[in-house]
Picture 1 (spheres, one colour):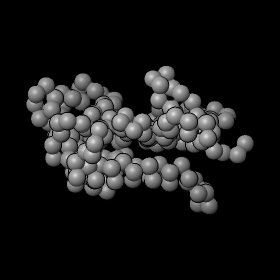
Picture 2 (tube, helix red, strand yellow; picture 1 turned 90 degrees about the vertical axis):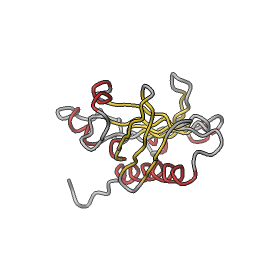
Picture 3 (cartoon, helix red, strand yellow; picture 1 turned 30 degrees about the vertical axis):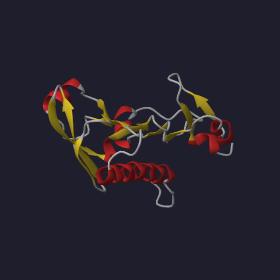
Length: 172
């Protein structure tokens, strides 16, 4: 890589991960406010993820957890979060580095973020080039209602979520 290149995609990715980190730290300190609840999707094949073997076997690539009514021992620091959740009526402890995150969604306010793991891309796309016009960064934010038109480039996905890609803000 050229040392004179600014890696905007990495900077944006890190900024969006810090949003999740701040949300989880706030939740660890204060609990979930109002109707907020979170769907967090992460790569289970990340070597730093620590989950029980039977969960890794059941979810070999990725897993989505829900933080809503029953969760314990939430700890969030600068590099990872830990949480205990109930699986088949058994309390299990999970350790998830932020680098393993794929997505974060709070349906109570229609807010979502999607993360793209560069390490996974490197393995999957080793011999593939990015198609012309396709951006390598896939950080997405959910935008509700009328804001999608104002933000530019909004589209409704199949599940009804409104998503705006950062590509829509680029000059063409």
